[in-house]
Amino acid sequence: MNLVLTGVSGFLGRQLVSRLNRLDNRVLLAGRDIDVLSRLFPVIKTARYEELTVKAKGFDVLIHLAVLNNNIEAADKDFFEVNVDFARRIAEDARDAGVPVFLNFCSFHALEDGPDTPYARSKRAGVEALNSVEGIKVINLFLPAVHGDCNAGKLAVLDKFPDFLRKTAFGILSAFAPTVYIDRIADFITQDLNKVSSEEPVFLADQKDENVVYRLGRKLLDYGFALSVILLFWWVLLIVWVLVKTGSEGPGIFVQDRVGKGGKVFTCYKFRTMGKDTRQAGTHEVSESAVTPFGAFLRKTKIDELPQVWNILKGELSLIGPRPCLPVQEELVAERTKRGVLEVLPGITGLAQIQGIDMSDPVRLARKDAEYIARRGLLFDIKIVFRTFLGQGQGDRTSK
Image 1 (cartoon, helix red, strand yellow):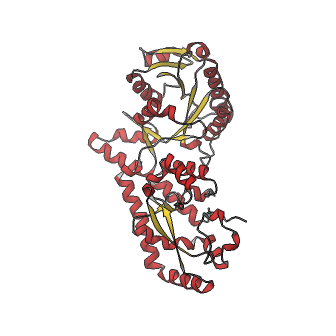
Image 2 (image 1 turned 180 degrees about the horizontal axis):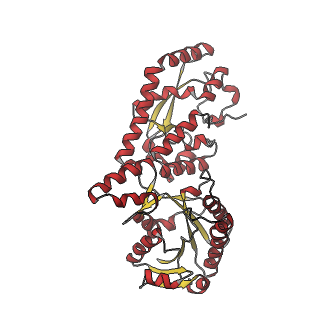
């Protein structure tokens, strides 16, 4: 590939350039001070930003790493000048040079529910500005903390560990927050970039299911929750079952097929909240009148979900994950399959649910599910649990 890179003097840029250049790509480095670039990368061609419209001709992708980062103290206007105005100008210069793809790097901090910092606000505005540039395919790539031959930021502490302890220390730290290995980023650029659409953001992260500490932590959360409900609140389950059973005609427990990990269908258990003869369909397709008065209370308080602790104990469900859908919701199944969402266990609650995104919008839901998978970490999972208990997310809404 023929690659132009901006902002490569930092930690991420230096490691990425060495890998991309090693893979026999044609690389051009753009910056304000080409003397610095020449010292860092003496065998790679360089160009000033002002020369891009000429020197970038014939290149396939411009990789935009230039940023005013969150470790810099500066005024808001400085962040917006670099992360919005300058980014848009570089994208327009790349377009004018005939470069077909502009790859914009962002941190997870720049996501819509990220922190309210000058960096995060400016990067969010930058994404919107870049998406409005016509004549070039803009891809926004969101990344967590990056690790490689050495580390920076919060992961820099790993370099202080002796070699024989570093892997163990990384496994512990990365169980709590998402990370991505620099080689995965390089592989995405050289192998997968042309496969993605500019219509939605791309998330890259290490596979959390390969992290032993994370898997153990999730098991403790899942089984701790399930056993606590059964051992401490069995009497609540019994009372609710009796009230559902006597409050309207039909069983106390509602049984329904759902799509689980790997697309495997499993039987999901909930307290019944709708009339006996309600048709099998997504909740958003069912009339609000189908919900019983007591069922409305159960849905609002999420008590109707508690019988799913049995699904957790059977290994079919997790406490946190994408909400399992019905087999008949074929569009959602297809969208989730395309994004790898079905590769993880579904959950009782999840990121989409606490943000009020339900199954009535399959594409948006599948995108949010994919975002959750990339952002997984024990701290993030616990945050989702707390926000659920605080009342955020009411599940799928019924039709009027």
